Image 1: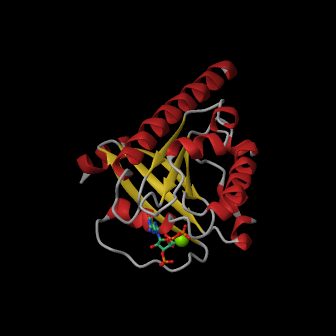
Image 2 (image 1 turned 90 degrees about the vertical axis):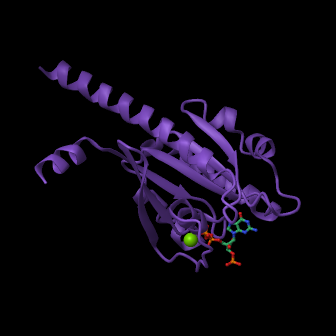
Length: 194
Ligand code: G3D
Ligand code: MG
């Protein structure tokens, strides 16, 4: 028991905030990260939380927050202590792509998300007419708006699971790097106060 506790004390953890418009596929994705079963989602009222150990010493805690207009007003309450932003886009929803981009830009301007790494999931690649990762990169102005952080646009399909292991791997690498750089800067701050 003592040994097990000591082992767990070493496990590092990062909060991953999953955001995006309603119906982008966030809850389906979260479920698919955990299991391969088919899953029926209902619109998320509030939020879902789940922990996934993506590497032996690193756990990601996913916060899947509802994306309806009313819920978006509450997103700002979830931003503090975020170790990575997973922004989910319905790549087939041409009508709401601009709206999704606007919400994304607003998020990136928030002080709590400064330098926080971003993975954009270009979801629903199985649907006809879906924008691909290059289209989303260009339309979301990724090079301009994410120049201060690590970022990646991953095409995926939450229903089949395609692209999800790459997304998790990328997210873990980014979150670990961000975690380490935060630890280092806190250490320097402590040293300065000595
Ligand atoms: P949200 O949590 O972002 O609001 P959900 O979105 O996970 O509830 O998904 C909304 C709808 O999109 C669901 O369909 C879900 O099955 C579907 N969906 C999610 N990912 C994909 C995908 O990659 N491809 C396709 N074709 N559909 C997807 P329903 O019909 O239940 O509304
Ligand atoms: Mg949901």
